[in-house]
Image (cartoon, rainbow, N blue to C red; front, side):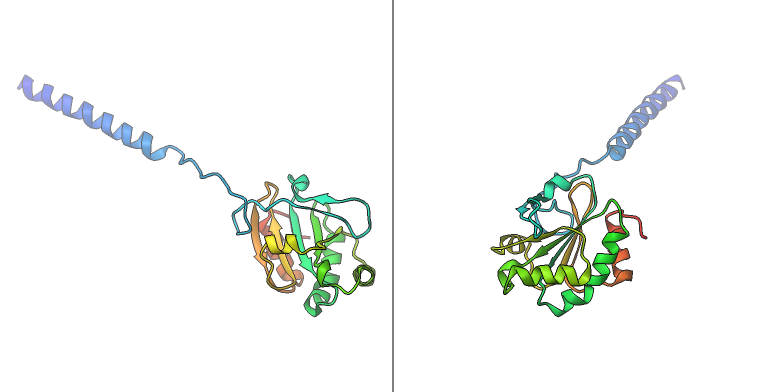
Length: 182
């Protein structure tokens, strides 16, 4: 009888050890794969530096880390870009802490004066950068304009949208980068 109790205790002991081991291995946090640089949702937005339209000096994307960034590729001659321009300008004015950056596809413009006129027409106060060679648009895979990338505080792309944005959509995409809605 004593042998049976001893054998049962040994089996129970090993069963407990196995259960504890399974719990330990099953509840451990799984290490995340390191993020890669790229233009897909979930990747770190590629860095670039472009000059500003107003001549105040270039802006480097990665210098904006720690803030939510809305990167909007556009051209002044583009009707859908014109359709969203007023709403973008108003959103930027009402959104402290959000870095809305316009990237003009300058190589497609007839002149820089047209870009400046576009900025004046819509009262755009956010920085407008000049992609004079189209290299940044190419790197980001921009196929149509307007195209917006919503980038979180860690520099990760959380959404890409290739259509004109209006206030309800703007709020939806700003939430994806943890920016409070107005």
